Length: 296
Image (tube, rainbow, N blue to C red; front, side, top):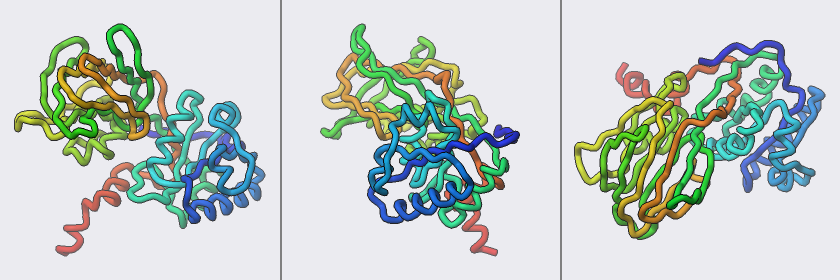
């Protein structure tokens, strides 16, 4: 569960923004002016800096210097920033200028108030699980990467079913013909896995969700497993298959390849503004109470 923070230590702020949006540019300029008034030291991510005509830093330099990263955009922008900063343990907070925004807690209209409250020490910090994922071909490691939301093995451009074996801690679970399978963290349980009818996992639950994609059998159902498990997906038959991670890293897979997924020792640290509540976010984003409200 989130823990109340003590004395604030966010004097050095990194800014990351979604590219290609005039609204993001305006928000970045507004936030820079606000932070300068607060006498914060500001670092701007390199590509973000280019869109506003400023000098920027790469993620390695930001990771070494910043106390907090403020991300302006949607969940995808926040995911990309979090993946780049996770090894540096720089906490992140999101200002939502995307669509749904499960992870970007602060609304655009509340940007100054939300960031101001955080700078004044009114915030909570929550650690979210991250996946370590590796594709192994024979004895060779083809790809190693991280995922905050999910690791996915799926069909490629030809659109034909793939066949794979799934094992848990070395124990065979099942063979399946399907469009693919998702391994989702609690954070990712409200992303791609949700659209595939997977379970919603509260962030405090130490679990991962295994969610088949369009399985060629009615008996295949999503399963929640311990996040201490090592999950192995072995590709048995596929004319075209791919793995992707948070929708960002992408790798072609061949028959015989194995995707090994486990919880990372690293975590992503989310900073939440005052008033943040997990289930309030779900109610808002998923419209849970809308039907009852209309009936009353």
